[in-house]
Length: 509
Image (cartoon, rainbow, N blue to C red):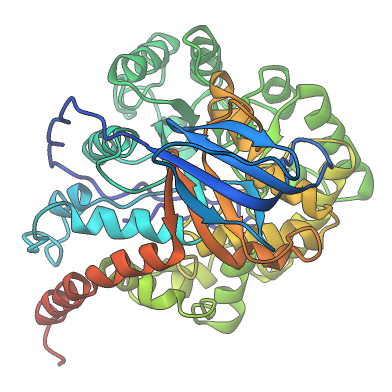
């Protein structure tokens, strides 16, 4: 279920998500009304500037921020619900710009015999629990960076249900992953390499077809993957631009006859690099990681105008598993929100980061330095003005949906970003990346009401992003009490799922 990220220093590739065969049910045509809310006497942090607007009254109506009234102004709105904002802080909703959403459709279609035939109940309880976990952490936007065709069908359906107000969840952005054969496969003699097709293109024509089919199916963006050869990578990136897609993914593989080189890649850039590991791989190839190499790489990023989702918490977690030989502790009570299927993927033998094979890879002795190098590189990019978004690769082992975005925000603060810059990376920058035509994502009149109400000032301490009173998701208010109650309603479902998995475990020898 998890798209694994192999280590930065080792330069290996993630495995794809498990295949799924379930067909998503059609969405009904109706849209639930968003309603009206008045948030009284709140401190607004728009996040698109350094402004702090104290004692404001904010009117939310029909899914948007209708008015932000000055101190002392009284809003009288018929049938509006009132939210007490005294001593609280209204900030843009957070966006996880890189995750891999498991859906119950993917479970139903899994080739894993342990998962096949699980009783998942009715009413998409599994999907609802995952979406609520994101909202509980203030994540009101989430970008899925690739899965199987059938699991993507489920996500496209789920996106529509959330937009229509029939399921509580973040705004979903569904990416189409496009990849070719690994470099070692592509280097085989002619006739040994599988024929090109849009599902695994090795020609420019099939790369173009893959992008066009993604447009027809309603994807939001394209994820180019690192094993596209030079001509196919270029065709995918250029056709994506023509189709109005942004591209966020892996930089091409280096070092083979059909691969792109660094100069080619930066001359034909994607919109965004999916994690700092990709840039680190470019930095280490054919160099000794001297300061001049980091400078040159950072300047190439500036010149290309690509942004990056650093994923420092991802590297930290992987290195932690390598060094400690166990999954790092999950903050607070978040572990209980991790569903039984995902917890199974975190444990041996499914968790490849705890395997001996992972430890035996070439250059494994350099792996533990990957996190430190990623921090140095990320700081250099930030100093030069490269745009950041918050991405986590959740649910990679140790990184639950939701809270891992808060952890990444802390990582960005620790490399030097100001708290307002962290908020910007976690919200506005992601809106500009995935949905530039739908507003800035700031707390401003006319913008969509995807917001987080905090009980403490995030500008005083960025860790206060975890002190959430409630969220506006798609313009609908959910207090933390409501979210927790909805999650509690799914606990019996989670226990039953755990019992089913336990019953399917093979008997001990």
